[in-house]
Length: 119
Image (cartoon, rainbow, N blue to C red; front, side, top):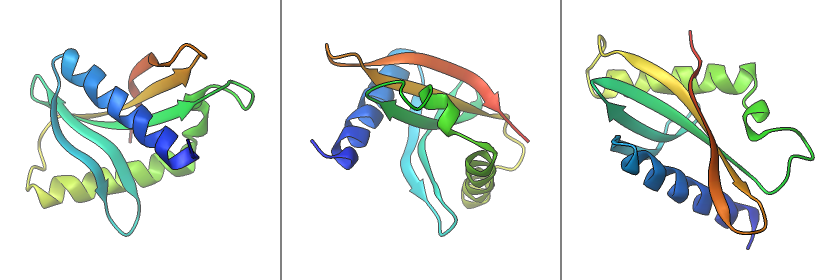
């Protein structure tokens, strides 16, 4: 399995996890010329922008550590574009990170960091 397939498998697992937790999926892989948001979901009136990080090891740190300030800034900008697109400027929002890891026994959502970063 190449790294793109590995990432797609992690995103699918993350989407399934969110649905089981009561989230309604609004969009997957929302793209603009600036960047992409992996999953956009909603729960309890809050729009949640989710960055999924899938890793097979912690050799380079935790998956969430890959979401640096530059990446956060891009995600926030794309999220604002999404809110303009759906004409919803006053909705409560938050930014989450879902860490998906492969422990050798299969992939699993190992950590859901709610409100991981913001404006």
